[in-house]
Length: 392
Image (cartoon, rainbow, N blue to C red; front, side, top):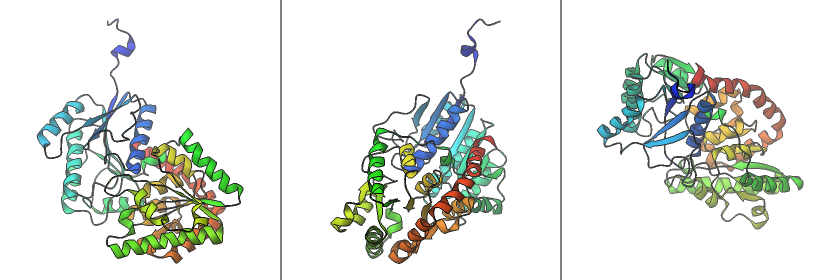
């Protein structure tokens, strides 16, 4: 009989979490944080975040929670070294989760998608609990990725985060599929000294009888060519001017992606460049780095949100705030299906139509109380579906 203390004799519960991307995507950060929070609360002692990019993932000036560590695999080109390091960690892990997001169907990079699916397959051979958490599948999934998914067979749980993606998976005949919701719905909002500054500004605008909405734009939806981009920027600038002057609306600019290749803040600053001084005093920006948890808290303070980013819409909807998102893949339509509120979705061409943008914002603001009540009614079920990523 061992006389070691019980805690020393118990095996440490360790989970591997394969991350979708590196620092800069607040949406990816939200999923990573939500997963780590949930797993730790569920009794996981250590969450090892598997990264393919230079660490750290979450922020250049921030430490992980004590129960999190990051393993930066060697460059994807050095596959033998990467898999050796990865397999060493697999032997000590009780469960493996992959944050599939929207990077497994090959639409961005077939090679990267296949490699992540290879990591999942490798894990499933060792670890009986292997899951791809709430992810999207585009109907035009790359054939190589279809083959990689089918190779997973009965070994891996596939959690599709919206009904559109679930139907794609079912149409492909994939095994062990279930419909869930994005794990970011489990993220807890965080009130801090940094959010207090934005909250104070919002309170000041409301004291003047104004309504406050969050605005996000992204480079890839503004347009691929210069003419389209100029048209879209001018359209959003006109939206700010008209809503500020005619409808008493103030704006909080929210950058939800900080990656050097597509920084939202740069695009937002282009939008507000040249607006009239009387309008500019009713526009503020979240210029400093905020955690995904802090941005979610701010979303709960707003009257509505107009966003190009899916995960900013998720943060807003998760706080009961009517959030209007521009649809650019089936994952956006699937998100609004979960809430039974298709009117929250805009088409990509609306980015270049100030009339369409203004009309939708005005309509949502006019029905804000009813829409918020609908979202609050649906939210508990959506959170249950997000939890089902882990509980089955």
